[in-house]
Image 1 (tube, helix red, strand yellow):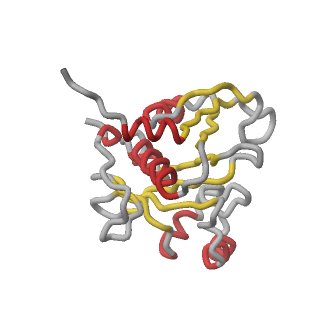
Image 2 (cartoon, helix red, strand yellow):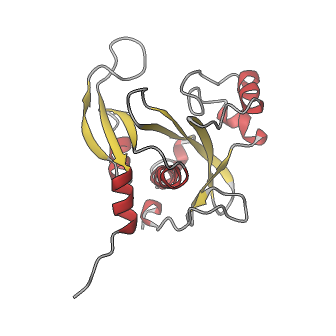
Length: 198
């Protein structure tokens, strides 16, 4: 059984201070002790600036810029060990879109392809819908070559809506990207549909 197939059973804060957790993965607010590891990855806690300089990252943390009304990031930890394994973030997708774009990273390659990413994205998506009431969609923008990432999106209840040409990151000719979305209506249906038997 994959970790991502395990039920994500809590959207309430736990005794450990988790925002949400499953048996294997938990989300919590970022702590000072996390900053050196997070600083190894440029845009994982802020989409507007590459916070891979520890001094700038610390300044952003102490100024409260890692969790605001319209953007924020959380630590992803392995629940049994409390070991930091990645981050998830959200930010306004665009001024004209009534929702957020999500991003995520599992830091070390040895922790990838184990279901941690899918569980953390689904927990984070559910948490945002449950705790921020006045927005109606979440989206992921994924380069078309990144098959593991768009398969993860589909496992988490996101639906492919189309192709954004030349919208990827990086220098040179940007890659085309798929756009995936999960709406508040999708979330309600996925969590509150009662299936009758017989």
